[in-house]
Length: 291
Image 1 (tube, rainbow, N blue to C red):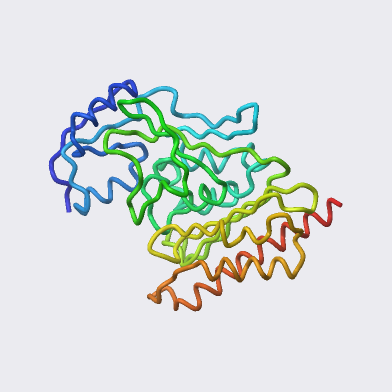
Image 2: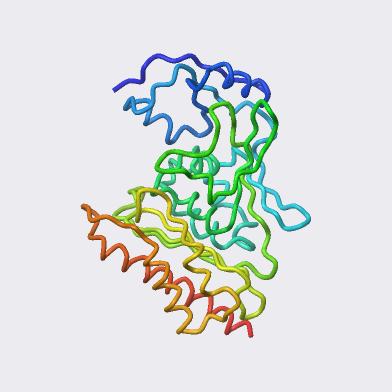
């Protein structure tokens, strides 16, 4: 199919782009990477009257760390930028673990981190990592900027807390108080396929003790599953076999999978439990070697 007719704008400033969105009354879509939007246009799942292309706006292609350790990822940072980032590999293991598993290499050259989060696909990788890491989205609209916690940003499948006249300009991830540990595991039938189950785990550790544990799941519910409360059983504890087993069980219970052609609900819940155990056990072994 072909998209329905639409007007195209390529603003040069954020203010100009926001003004266009504001005038549209909700009948416009923002184009960054286009790897989610273009297929939706072609299938006419989305039929906006106007496309606002933000690729010509400067200042949105950054991955930087503030003095307090806060990581900031601009709206035009591509998946491959994340995949090739030495900074993520060194200090943000949850993000680094997910980077090479997003879609396929072709999509990663154009798709954007922030755009993927805003697409709010229940099987999306980046939204899960953001929830696990306690991240926030910076939205800019006619009344200025506001920060939206990821735990309240994704409202449902393909629905977020962004207003129609706001642009998500940046993703913000707080720095760890201690040492950041974590990982991301994904089961897919083939490269680029939707996930059967994905697990994002983040630990802020001081020595062998967990200061804060974060977790989110993709592919095992009608929306990205916030499993932070479930994995919080690790907070203030060490990664013993008993504590790892309790955390894995709690996270698996938080999943809400459905039986489909990718597997039964019980199978998907088992995968979640296995992935959490595998990630936490790997971290525990790393800490033992470092001790």
